[in-house]
Amino acid sequence: MSSSAVSRRNSCRAVVSGSRSEGHPARRRASSCPYFSPGAQSEVFSVSLKQPIFTITLRFLLAVDLWLSKRLGVCACEGSPWGSIRPLARLVEFSGHVIPWLSGTVYSLLRGESAAKQEVMLNLTLALILDLLLVRTVKRLVKRRTPAQNRSDLLSSFFVERYSFPSGHASRAALCARFFLAQLVDTASVRVLVVGWAVLVSLSQLLLSRNHVTDVGFGLAMGYCQYSLVGRLWLTWDCLQDLVLMSLRENLDRAYAGVWTVDRKR
Image (cartoon, one colour):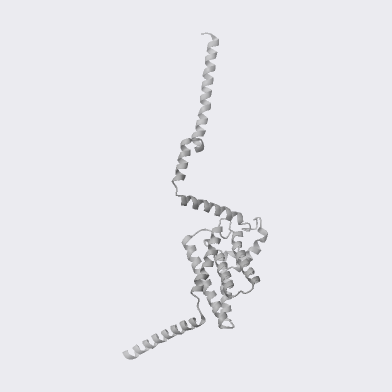
């Protein structure tokens, strides 16, 4: 066999072996990455299509809620883009807390100048207590954690809760705003101030990353509906006096009955 034939045969083997060696990494990459494999693509899409449309929609809305809440948390800490206005946002947040509201309403109830004002403050106190109980109950049932970028300092750590759904500040702001608009506010300028305060309190929860967007939205709807319940169960001053007198009379009757039974036994 001539040397030229042997060289041509070796060159052909080298080309064939080179093409095989180049084909193997391509197949390995195709097998390792599912996007290059038609079978893997069909499997991924079949899993997504098997999910109910309600689950897909709910996950999409949850992702949008998390993304929007993260973008709005510009005062979450001092290093945030708007960290310089964090003290102002915290001051607005504190104006919607339950402690100053309950303290103010109880003080106004005890120092009321007329029975009409005391009646209004009494129902506002009961409305705040109802809102506090309902918000706490829903939070314990849902147990949704606050946003990850939420940061609390020494003062706010005593007031910030672990769970965020629904927003208690937003619920309280909507309840108090509707209560004031219906019972105490007459002029248009004061109405604008009340509505603006409720909006700022709700917005502060998003800027400080205390709550998600859905938490604030549900809290506003919850507080708005609570006033309808308070209006239906409005407690008048005369009704309160009747309830107190009835309770006192029942206690006196029970005490008198107890004393009468003891005398008869003797």
